[in-house]
Image (cartoon, rainbow, N blue to C red):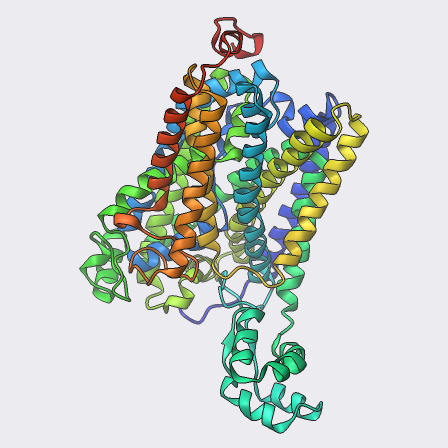
Length: 601
């Protein structure tokens, strides 16, 4: 089964239908937005989310759910089930612990955004501004990185493209024989050519890498004079990637601009259903093809070793994939990444009622089980069905399985499209949700709060569109030379939001004695601690745990930095609150009084 067909025209057709459906849903959402105030409707959907919309749009699936995560299962084995297990309790922590209180606070304060919520809860413009800064830092890094995933999924879906995964080597630069001939014929001196010859046929993932190699072999004068020519001939024009980037950007920015928050929610809901259908379909096809789960595991163990079926997992390079420290850490990572994400907090703020929040706990818990448990089983089967994928190609396991198992079935290309559309939908859902949060922060928390408090609805609408389109253009420009390791940015962004917002959120919801100074200290200490661990990690030797990559955190005592960030945030928040004057009694009464709002029933 290693000789696989590329995606067919049915796959492309499904993707086109997904794009068209998303735009249509955006236009439907626009009609609802027009029925009320612009900011409340555009950024919070008029607080009308029901249980299904809340549950199936508050998850944090992204391109990594269908590429990076399956790659880990295929490579390391059953232990990855423990790696993701903490995620199963996200609904309980996010909705059960703070859902009702956040919904109440957002109604009592009239808050429309996360910074707005903190600003009003503590009566502190400074706290709102600090929250906005961290929202922009962590959510922008995640959203921009996701543009790469969307563009590469378009390449997979293009008929006969030969692309099967979100390759980290896409768009590499190379000085081949043709490049050397071109340079010689265009006046580059022979001594310069000889100095650079050792670089022939080497690959460079980014122009900066090639620039550094040229500087190390040429004089400063020659490097400055000829650098642009070397870059010009070394850079391939990946038209499929650039075309996918354009289509993805226009689609996701387009439907989000049209319908705002509700467009993001409704398309997310639609795409979540498609994801579920695709995963269940692939599970039904994969288990019989592998001869059952017991046989699949036995075959995988024969190929790798007993570690594939046991902890801490199999690793072909001798690295410890999931030692005890990281196993412990990931129960914090997945729980608090969902808990602390501003995108998830906004969804809770937009809920219709407490009853809807309670229902969503069960719905999201069941949905996550139906996504992640089957993906583990599918990729264990994949090790038996398509054995021996080299490390650089393990991201291909879901596309390969999809194309091989649907090949020859009636409408196989369309069925493959339904599965391969899942990661595209997940990426679009991530980007659209983050786009709304970032734009709302700029418009509500900067423009309206500080620059134009009495701005008209027309001004707010125009600025919102300008901000979203500008963010889309920036993301496009930065992804012409995309980030090298998508999963690194996913973990950095999620952990950063958790260390920044989890403790202040709990303080805001349940501690009347908490002060604005304490909340600022908790935010700044948690967020900066996480950033510091990543900065230090760049300069440390490979710790032999976690994922390989040039951007990685330091693992103090073998623990993920989210543990230390949360601890630092908690200590700072409690300590500073106790050392500063108590909040005004009227503020406490307004936030914790017994008056019941009609919408809180």
